[in-house]
Image 1 (cartoon, one colour):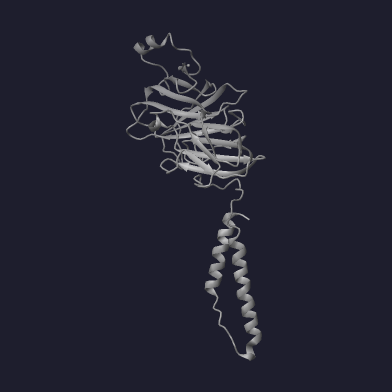
Image 2: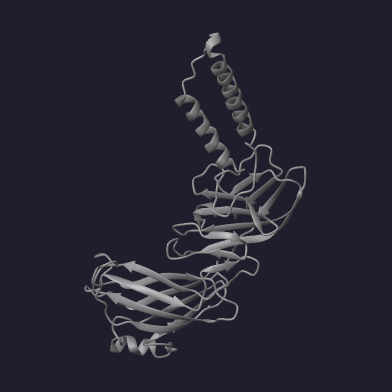
Length: 338
């Protein structure tokens, strides 16, 4: 019986007692009614005692989450290791501490930037060996994570930079602290234009496939081949300026290329009758945990004559006229020109 059920049942029975008016009857004539009333009261108190007794730690189902993680009697403390002096540049806003046993999730702790115990989770567990997953991300919603090999983001959660740590931890009776070092899981396509966004463009769709939206924390790679879509609304302040957008994916072990289709629209996102402009398709090389900086002329097919001279030596063409180049915090940045 779960905590959620216990709390609900507890509250429900209080409502039952509040709604019932029990009038004591002492006359001999109504002795049977009096006996029934006493038995009914005894039954209610017995039921409440049983329900209250189920308020204890239990296993969580796959969809549950809590903001706990500060148990006073904890025998396991997980603490995110941060570089000193770099605390203000943390590239994530949500931390998730997941504890599994025999491939079943038993603890699910979600923390958000600003929480008092942000970055530290303290729990009490029966001494044993557990699998611990720590996930950090910046997406709008949390991924589903029924098991460490299936951490799934989608268009509803959004896609972002993702960091993780996974491994076995032996929990003992006495309290132990573990410092967790997170590593990046994502690959990034930084799509840049050297020409400017025309006034007629109201929104742009980026559709890419070949990577994955599902992370396997045991390998650090993406699993299933995914089709990912990101929409960008263009406001008046962006028009007349070059475009830059970041697209995240998990690289699959057997795939080194993304197929990226970029479609500008003359109508806002979600319009009843979308009016699209010409789409362009690119093959973008990707590497594990690295940036593919993909730049070129998108809205106009060719650069000006002066720009052409500067571009000729760099122009390793992959699609219309884009260039791909290999970052410090990342495993590397690779520059490519289209």
